[in-house]
Image (tube, rainbow, N blue to C red; front, side, top):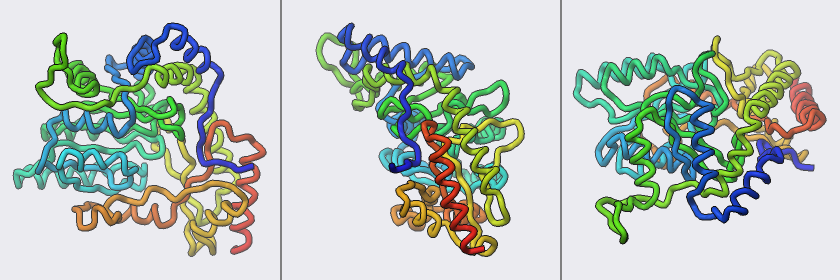
Length: 377
């Protein structure tokens, strides 16, 4: 039986929520389940945020950047190590990305490098329109430092929290609640899923109102179809939102299970040359995926050899995100850093981490990884 990297994990609550939507005939895009899902997530995140359910995390980022005023010729400063859907909306708006490296102590955007470049850009009168840091593999960025920088320079901050719902930045603050806006993803491989979907989270009510308007084809209030600007068909389906309602009931359990999976991998695989994604003191990562690096000089093998060995046994593993500044699409784009993200991509591997993975399945993964390491020792 194939062991997947991270597959959907249903709880049973979802069917009851979907049945309620069907019974009331709210199978169109909007309905009470969507309202309830938005309210439930807002309640969970706290801090007086407003939530707008959307068709994807990329849609949420697109709307957030448009509402932030990003347009042709503007710069958006963004984590280079991220999923493509976390950068493409910059292109949709005709803006230009400037990429930033990671801090080796957290594997999230290096706020020191960012601060230096913001100071330089301010002197040269070329500040970005927005900053988009990524909560990589379920770990929150340094919200305090980023929010202070954004406030100091008057730059909008949109946090890509696609992988981190359920994480905490500090004991009193949830990941996904920071910046002018944050974006969540409920794609099929995420900690919880709506089959496909996302959410825009913002402390600004007017941003939430604008997002709802733009996401429903920007239809002006009138008995006929009246449009004073263009919009999108970006709203989350009420049926998908019903799935999300059921998933929210088990979110903390899912995070706890993934953290337990990470802890077992770390206990079994720690040795010279194997490094696990760090967790800064005071933070609580979802450990969406267990991310490791394999140093060939110390282990005698490499990331790709282990990945292929696992694949031979029908076990799915995946390299870490390839940094965007290394992608052909963004060849020559400005990049600031020391190549921390490049090294992580070169040596990094994500191990199967789904919350429905059994102990026996994880033992099988550990056995094959250990065998590959021992063979080269």
